[in-house]
Image (cartoon, rainbow, N blue to C red; front, side, top):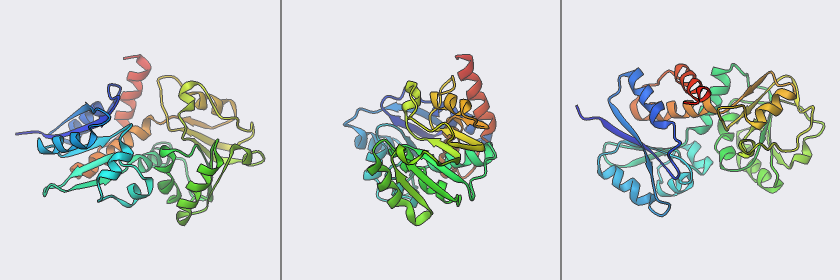
Amino acid sequence: MKKDCYAVMGNPIGHSKSPQIHGLFAEQTGQNIHYEALRVELDSFAAAIDEFQNQGGKGLNITVPFKQQAWELIEDRSERAELAGAVNTIMVREDGSRYADTTDGVGMVRDIVENHAIELKDKCLLVLGAGGAVRGVLQPLLEQRPKFVIVANRTPSKALALARQFNDFGDVFGGGFDVLPGQQFDLVINGTAASLEGKVPSLPDDLIYEGGSCYDMMYSAEPTAFQRWAREHGAVQSLDGLGMLVEQAAESFSLWRGVRPQTRMVIEQLRSQMQGGK
């Protein structure tokens, strides 16, 4: 029986864990699929999608730097993709039409709420950064009905613009890091890539409520700089984004195949490999 073909497109792409993740999902759920990583030249993205579909491809994940371009190419988009201004999942329907979604935000929320049992309803949330990664998670965060969300960014105008865009979904405010002194939060989410470079924004020492947690959307084999900062400043849980990666993949897989894989064992396997240096 011929396998249905899926892939992740990006540039660079050699680091991608998606083929392994979706391979584990397929094995677990008995789905007959083939999933590969495809490096796409920066000026060839639209042609690469066409070629993939013409060869019978059923669905794609999209990663850096093509998420915004995918959004522009495919007009039939989910509401969350529409708002995020970016797409990480494409489904090819039986009639050849394409549907685009973004699963990053819902993947992060599921990791926080279900895998780590952190309650978001009526809580005070802080999100650091105002780039595409943050834009992609604000709607799912606000749908958890927190007390409020503050978006803080080095360039305040970007944070203010994001807050205005999403204020229909709940109480969300934007500003620079200078708005943070004197405030405390139940959960602080880092949506910047700075911690992978060993950097953390200048944050007040008493930023985290007693019993509060921190979540870095980035991940690495060792704790990120933001995770280390969180532990030094009293966070009960100091989490990275590996679970988000697996959960967003599970959401894509569910959209394509109509079955939701279990994620916990996959997260544990990836973590073990990373820490073992494999």
